[in-house]
Length: 110
Image (tube, one colour):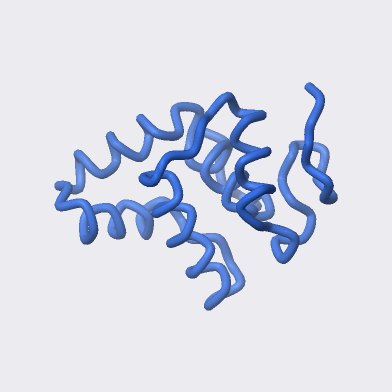
């Protein structure tokens, strides 16, 4: 697949340096995943980026579920369902990649 991303990616398509991330990079990475970013995606990606900027580590899925519960009035089950509706190939495979995280070591790609 041809990419418009002009940043260094690892062999699995994750950013080598999360500092290279911006909204254009996110949109290009999303397009590779056949996703079009809407406001709901941007809210999640914004939360993930803020978390990363503060802690220098990707938030795990429970943090994003908690964010959805707080901001979207979702139950825990509905927040998980919504997250995997938006990122059908998985949190690590799509959300972390599009948010510019390095591939988390030790996490499954599901």
